[in-house]
Image (cartoon, rainbow, N blue to C red; front, side, top):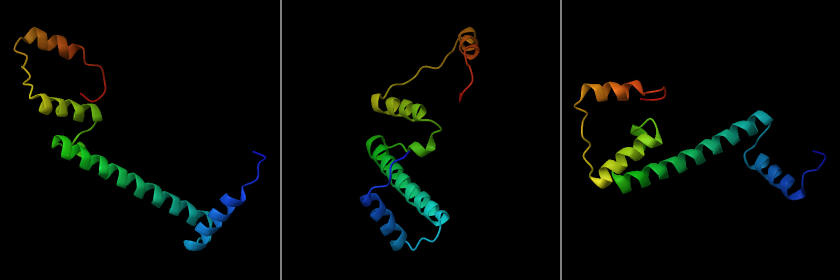
Length: 102
């Protein structure tokens, strides 16, 4: 990287340092992390709100998105799953489980 910073980028960085009264790169790193987390939290809360308004289910109560979407499908389609009554079939399915969240 033999390129110099542009004047626009330099002026923006200078403005950030002055507005937030930054003294060190550590201060800048903490500011970056704070803004990153706040943006992520805002996006995630919007996602949660949209999911809850659409399906009435909160994705925070699930370990994985596939688990959440499975429940959304069951609720949306009003599908009733049948339970396995045959012991041999149950053992067959249990024998096929390979790692992950089960």
